[in-house]
Image 1 (cartoon, rainbow, N blue to C red):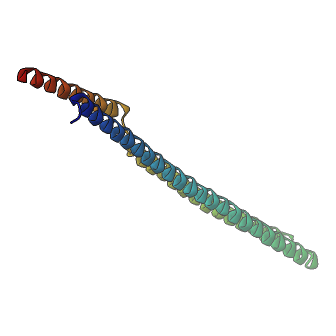
Image 2 (image 1 turned 180 degrees about the vertical axis):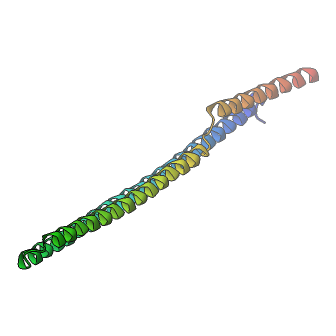
Image 3 (image 1 turned 30 degrees about the horizontal axis):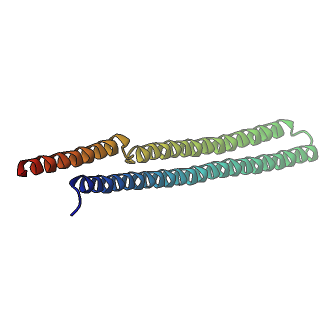
Length: 172
């Protein structure tokens, strides 16, 4: 039969190994959860950045098309004016209408672009909030808890040895 102190030390060693193993397993799990949250955040944030660039490029192309169309309309008005001498006032009104129409269309495109960008920024803020909420819920293992568990196992082992010594003395 083993010495009581040997049994107590074995019990303490098993508890220590179990506690350390559990601590590092929990730490690995927390690290994995952080890595998954980071990866998801980076991917979704990149998607929003791509979406924002697409909105800007689309609006830029649309504004360019509007400007080209306005130039064509201005050119036609000027050609018509030169062919029909004496219609200066009508040509001026026609050009003013072309400028006004171009301005309205450019403004509409810019307003739409700004609204889409605002929506993307709200989505980005929501993404950030979800990321912070997700990472704040990740359980980190406690070194203090592991230390207290080891200390408790040590006290139990010591108490067991002392009890065995006391029981042996009483028998003698």
